[in-house]
Length: 254
Image (tube, rainbow, N blue to C red):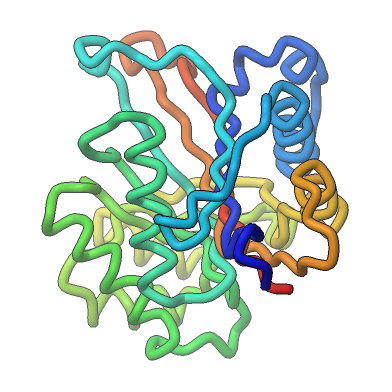
């Protein structure tokens, strides 16, 4: 890899609620919303350079209005992480990046979507990711943690093993038209909130990655998604979404 080529690309869309053309499109899927917000971010980006002092990271961030510090009272920020693997470093990097980007001392809730949610997923494969989440809770960076789409068996095993218990579990209704009774019962008995969602298993496709690398002029460089984070800040008093956006990290080689 050339010394001028990045090893990583980190892109933050900022608050997509400010993207008028995007929010006018009703009924968008998560993938469509992410793709559209990335394209808007790249179109408004004025260029930059690789930070070789920081491991060759290329950061793209759309300028947007941040909440004043005293505006955080009465708000709740939740983050959903879509991981490409269960390594602890991905979780640590994502939480740090999102907190820095939103200028927040902590995140109220983080829900992780592991890369493998099949019936064959093992507790051992989930442990590194969960330990990183527990560490984030211990140091005050995150207040509550949860999981998306894992089988009930794996959820029970993780709950019994974990030091910091999951408080939320998400179920994808596109693959399961009703919440399994076994999950409902376990959640009720252990004070776990069950939520539903319609996020696809893979929210970033090759076209999105190609759009990013082309805009950066990264010819001959192969980039793969490390993680994607979606944040939402809600004004709790009125239940209004105040801030919503995406951050993604790409690992590059070539």
